[in-house]
Image (cartoon, rainbow, N blue to C red; front, side, top):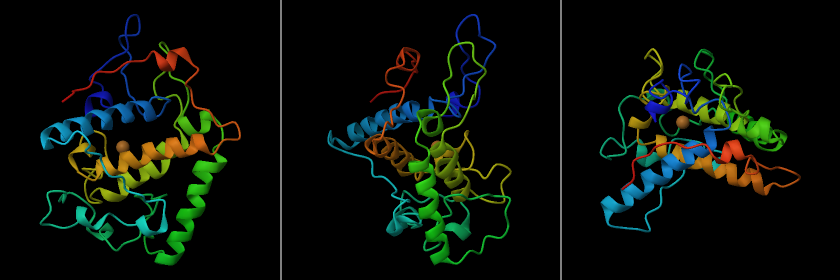
Length: 225
Ligand SMILES: [Cu+2]
């Protein structure tokens, strides 16, 4: 994950001086879908269970609007130390969190209403592929051409909300190079992926880029099991 965000790869000739970042463009959804797909296969193989499926953190439903409690149990292997201690359960998640807004004391019931209204805006009002998926990023384009609604928030914002507020980049979840070290990264991303599927099912002309050859022909390297 870090390699595809922090400049380990460049575009192909003649744009080899441009660094590849799979965020803030139409690559966000497909790259992370492959990433969690192979991660799921690796875990399934380690467990000897070909039917293993990663869980998702359903943070857009009222019942899921806190960190899943088993990720916050210090005796669990899903526990991770570098997090914001104020945001452990039962604290209600702020899906539009701003780490530089120090008025972090919205009452829980109000935060739940804000979250529901916010999800409506990001899922329903973002009705075009450009708004929802992010902008096209073709060979020769400037990187990070335009972020999609879900990637911007709740994806980025919940990364920041989970990470440690006193670290320079809200490590570990709050920044690309360390985010995937925290086990909650995975249910956070499986849920973002689930929202892609839900959005397409909302219909009324909502279509992703699956008729665009440049999007379909893009490729990345992953580890398999
Ligand atoms: Cu992420």
